[in-house]
Image (cartoon, rainbow, N blue to C red):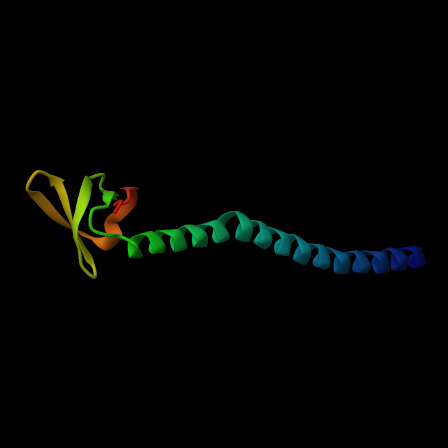
Length: 106
């Protein structure tokens, strides 16, 4: 009987080593899924937003993060001046511009 128990013990130890390897493979697969479905698209979106904010120009129609629609009348390093109505201008931080509705066509 002890011989059978010994053989079972050896088989069990070999199974544990295979379990460790499968755990590593599963963890690598999960990381790859997270990278391609979450991290990479987020980095791409940040790059596009940074490029859009860098290309703001006088005359562009924009929407702010707060939902205000306006036309850019002046662009400084960190501040953008928007005309939201006739003779009504507000200053908004450049980072709070959400999207460009219409680019100025020259």
